[in-house]
Image (tube, rainbow over all chains, first blue to last red; front, side, top):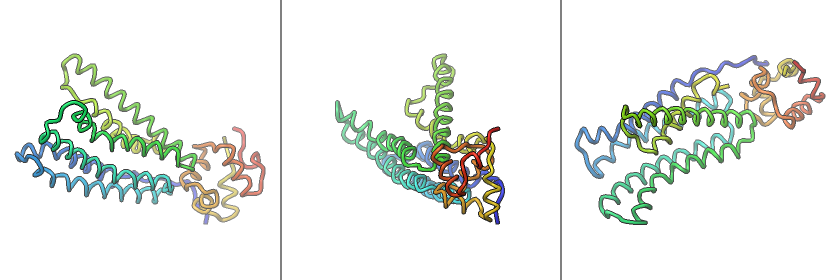
Length: 197
Length: 63
């Protein structure tokens, strides 16, 4: 029996998983401060976030299968994201501990400081591989469109924030926040209608 | 660009997943082409034409 036009449901469960992951990961720091945890005692706070990450990966695959969107390249992309997040958590903790214990100087200080940036650069590499490996031309166009929406979102927010910061109306934000903004932009692009079709 | 993909598919009693599998693309892509949201590249248009044993202009029509 031939099917007609398919309406795709909103990915509410996936959205909830992403929200939970963001809240748990970015909320771990303030929570550790509130509970006055220090050093490795903070590590168990990351476990709920990592469980949310696995749920997020599961929901992403489930939604892709539901929408007939599960290409091999997209599956590989998701398989690359999970270890990158784990490596990021490990490198971040390692960098904080090494900075405290070694009080490094010079080149070593630079190397330790950029350690957590490496898996984040890996995310950009994974996105690049997705563009290259995606053999479904419509899906490739959608990936590129979402990346452009995310880039636009990041540029708009960071430009406005920068001028507000110059006028001392908002606090200073580290430059790596641009990467978080880009990822939020990718989530935003996956929800808005012009990023879903 | 308009197309007759849905009619041709229905004539063969294929669903979107059947057509997607034969073309090696996702069901979402078939849906996007059928509904006119996406115009396929020339190589994909040729693959579609070959599958239905028709000329491209017998499937894809000018607006």
